[in-house]
Length: 409
Image (tube, rainbow, N blue to C red; front, side):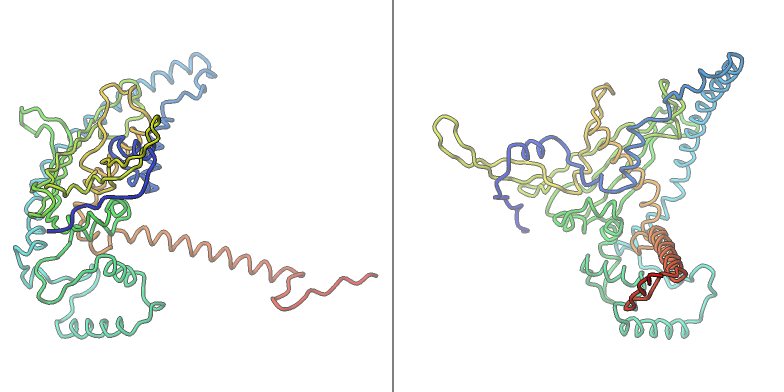
């Protein structure tokens, strides 16, 4: 049996305990700059603000502008209908993607061993090589990689070394399936990696699949269902909880807000619900016990009390804050946490699940590093320009030379 969660013996203040007990702690979700930008955009709501420009126009022009704005409202309503039908199309194609995702899961979990034909891979844009040439090339590359120093390694090779050291993967030619496929893919994404704590990894090693299920009214069906999607995380039996699947359900709206129709930019997530995790006794890693000294005001006696507070964990993702029925009751902190949660849900739906293998290999995040390299090159060019300016300066002297003193005439 794995060890039970330890009791933290450090002394903490009443304020720290109250903060830890104040509901789902999703501060880690807010570390990503893209999320912060998205949250700020939602909170600012600048799009609906009046500039006062219309009031400066002649009455005849003002009437025409108002007519155009009425047309814009109708366009927003029509756009909402478009996205509703697009969602129905997504539901239709989800059925076509399903057998492909099922085969992916079978390969990852060693249920299906790919045939030679299925395993043959040719880089796009390159011609297929014969097997002998390919084997020789692989052998040469392996020897080159072993002989390279750290300075000579490419960014992709450094990335691979980092992943190996981070996940401590132990694989050889007898390995079945692709061990820790989903854990590796998630840790390769900064947004998700920040959510995963050390104590989460042992459980996430048992993650066998992440599924995307669309909900909503199907084309040609009279059955009513709310537009949205479900993320389903499938697990092997493990020593922490009895669930075989953990789910996160997102509800969406694809119609303009009556109070702010011009802010409509497509379907929005309006709420999300998690699921109950059936933790085995003493194995709930989303909670921890802390000991605190309390002093009796009257008697002056001191006692030690143990309190259960929330612990940082990826599995807090399945316990999001509730959306208040009245929007006026939602404070900025809850709104920011929900906005971050919604962005993560969108990321799983639109990028991570469809391209999981590319996140596993790191190829799906190369675009970001390319942008950074480009920025660095621009910075280098600026530095070179500065050097040229220095050389053209008549007062410039290389290091080690002192400028001649000005002589008095």
